[in-house]
Length: 265
View 1: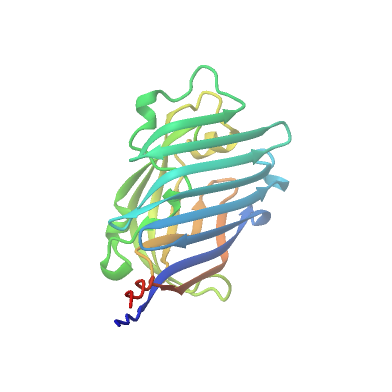
View 2: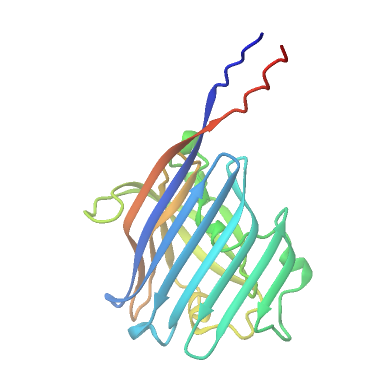
């Protein structure tokens, strides 16, 4: 009679829980919460947020977004994306299925008339949530100038735009709340590509060539960086998004292998 022992294996998953405050002219106008889980070969991200108050002229309402995909060579490659954006006047829903950075299925409510992005503008893209987690480019997830040297081709189901990043400086945040530690700061440019004929006031505001920068921090146990601060400078009032909570953790889940059937006696 033969006996076989099955050895336990572990699969690690890294989680990021981040909460952000949104201020405009130094007045709190909204908040957002980001939750991400990254495994060796797959990832998922959800985000919920709301904004209003003195920012009503640019944005007012709530939003919930989610995405899921695979991790390939340290990059996030989305497979599905959905969003629900509620304003005072309407509710917009988006559902996308993607394959190899191209949109294969797209459902919109309400639908878009003339001016919608063409088929070729839905290829070679990334969804807005996956775009928030930037490949570190450095060894073992370390901060590097290279993280900022990229252009992100984003499509949210309605709008197609580029987020152009350029290295600005290495810095260190020392605030008591939220994230405290080293960051890489990138200059950020919002470039409209398609679908912007009926753009919202916020999109028009970002499209006016404003000076913007984003600070990225490492996420423990992952090859990506996540935003901890976004600044949109204006002569009238600055729009600032700051993390007041930024917690990364790594968990290991035991997975027991299947034992072979005992040999017949």
